[in-house]
Amino acid sequence: MDVVDALVSHHGVLRQLYLQSETNPEIFEELMRQLVVHHTMEERYFYELLEGFPQARRDALEAVNEHHIIELIIKDAERFPRDHERFSVKVESLGEYTTHHLDEEEAQIFPLARQLFTLEDLNTLGRLFTEAKDKLLGVVLPDLPASLSAKRPKKAKGGNKGSPGFRGCSGCGPLSWPGHRKPETVNVIPTPSQERDDRELSERSFYGLS
Image (cartoon, rainbow, N blue to C red):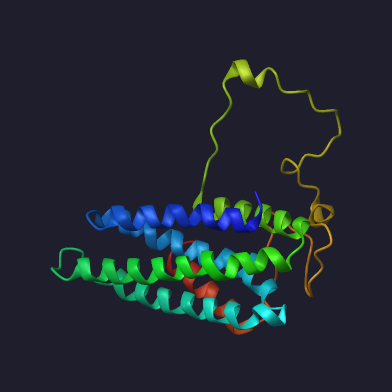
C-alpha cells in the first residue's frame, strides 16, 4: 500500500470515529488519540518531503498549519466536561474541521503528490507510515490459524530476524533526505524544524504516546 492509499485508509477510520463519537464520549477519546498519531506520522512521512517540491510547498505548509488548529481544538475539548450540555458542540467542531481538512487533502494534495513522488518512494513511505502508526496505536495483528500457519515456508537459519520485508536502510530505496538515519524500532525521519519536533514531543507526551 503506498502512502496515499495508507493515508486515505486511515482517513476512513477517522471519519467513522467522528460519527460514532457524536453519541459516545469514550469513542471521542479514541478519535483524539488517533488524530494526534495520524498528524505526527503524516508530517514525518509525507509532508516534510512534499514541502521539498516548489509546486506543492504552499499546500503542504497550509495542511500542517491546519493540523496545528485541529490540535488546539483537541486540547480544548480534552479539558471540557463530558457531561456538559455544550460538549456535543466541541465534538461537532472538531469533526467538521477535521472532515473539511481530510476532504481537501484527498481532492487536492494527494493527487499532486502522486505526480511528484516516484512509485517506489510512495510505496516506501506508505510502509513507513503504516508501521509507525500501528506501533503508536498499539495495533496487534491476529495470528494465523494453525492450518494456515503450517503452510508457511520455513525460514533459513541465520536469516533476517527483523520485521518481515524490512532490511534496515536497504528497504528505503532512493529516499535520502537530509538527516536520514538507520531505523530502529520505529522508522523516524528527523524533523527539519526543531520547533515542530518540540511540539510533537509535547503532544505525544500529553496523550501518552511517548
